[in-house]
Amino acid sequence: MRANDAVHLGLMLLAFAAAYLVPFELLLLAYVVLGPAHYFTEISWLHDRSYFLPHRGIALALAAIAVVAALIDNASWFGLAMWSTLIVCAMLAATTSAAEGTLLFMIAIALAAIMASSGSSLAVIGILIPTLVHVSLFTLVFMTLGAWRSKSRVQALLIVLYLVAIAVILLAPPTAEVRIASLATVGQDYFGNVGPALGRLFGIPGIKLDTRLTSLLAFLYTYHYLNWFIKADVIRWADIPRARLVLVIAASAASTALYFYDYAFGFTFLLALSLVHILLEFPLNSLALRQLGATAGQSLLRGTAVAGTATAAPRSRPARSSASKPARRRR
Image (cartoon, rainbow, N blue to C red; front, side, top):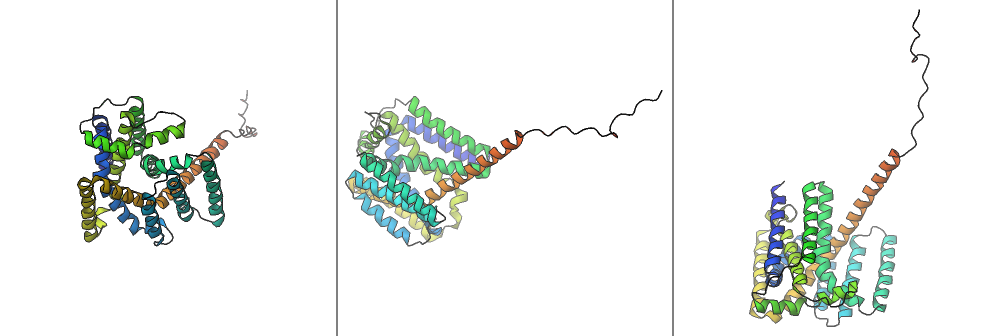
């Protein structure tokens, strides 16, 4: 096991244990303390890679959409903004031809019409894309793609452990008590809509931000942030210009301090900052989904070809030549 994989495992277990012991407090503290550092460092990393867009200027439009979306009160309009931006980013970053882009656009329009006709589906999409989808599904996609490319069994095992941790929290939720009531109350105010959204998505009424869901969100958010910080071979901390690194650290600390100074205004600011980093990551998410699908498809085709070769009709047994026949023993 590489040192980085060992650290990876240790941080995953740490996030899991903390989510069991102090789920309510961990959820908010991870979002407020680790969140800004993650947002600023990833935006810096994306900037050096032109945000995986054909033109870097498009990123300014994405950031503007995120700020405006943070001020939208209507859940359906917010969901439409998230869905539309994701599709546009996928068309720009993950399609390789006009035909692919047109097909993706037509499918997206059809799905949007279906969601709009069902009433609350767009609102559900708007709640889940920047929360559970971003911190769990896309994290799982990057973990799977990395393990597949590296052919690492240890990284594959980490994926299994990640899924097992989620299953354990859902099937055997913690019974932790609230230790800091103010943090739990604020967490309920800001993350309470995730439960009803999941309930509408899966047709299960009565889901709320109880200990089970809070512990799940605490684990997913904390691990999502920690998983980013340990990617030293991806981030390349030493290559970040010193002035920019100092600016990132200062901005992260100021964002956290702003929240504790005035949590209402601070959370609004953090929500906008979070949405900016989520929308700027949409092109990368779309590209990763395409690459993972292509890799899986190629492996499936290779597996089918191998299976077809193995099950092909056996070759007929060659007839013995006269030279190969054993000579008769002379008497």
